[in-house]
Length: 234
Image (tube, rainbow, N blue to C red; front, side, top):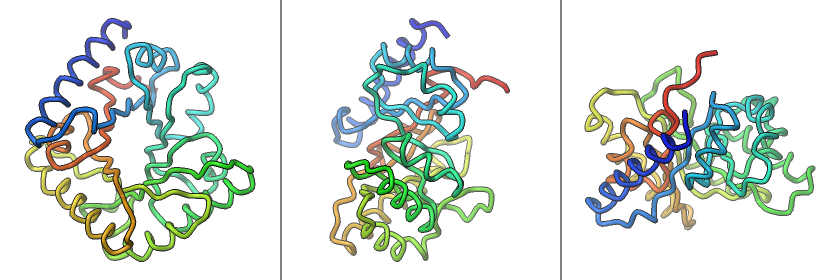
């Protein structure tokens, strides 16, 4: 995709973000756009960076390892947004600025140990991924385990728990997804009150439903296809 196309896509998306934020009585600068760069080459990341994107999301540790050399010099924030296998947690703890898909306590504990062993002084920013619809194919913590797990994650010295993330069921009509976003917001509010901990981040909404997510309180939206175009076929 040409740089001008990425720039044009970004301008369109920014306009949609601003409109959705206004409908919710919010400001556009309260929402962070994460460019989902999975399957796209480092050159596409550079194009998006030059257009103004500063946050990028990858799904797989190995894919990011293979292409990160092509992004050297970019002052961006790198998010892992896909399921993290336990045997890759140590690598992820060193490669990413934020792990947005912590889906069980054991993964959080591995990240914490790896961060300590790497002698990285900054805490690793993490979000807990919540499974919203009981889909067996989706990762994430169930509602019943969220509170207990969050209490234990917040105690890990090398992690900073800042909020929740979800991937709701894919439905053609974005309005049908609204209840899932609203439920995640309510869960976050309940959890913050119980823990006495500020949890400012709600990562929810993708290319086809991010406007509804913003209306329901999203602070981060993960945009891939609308920004970069269709994913490359491997």
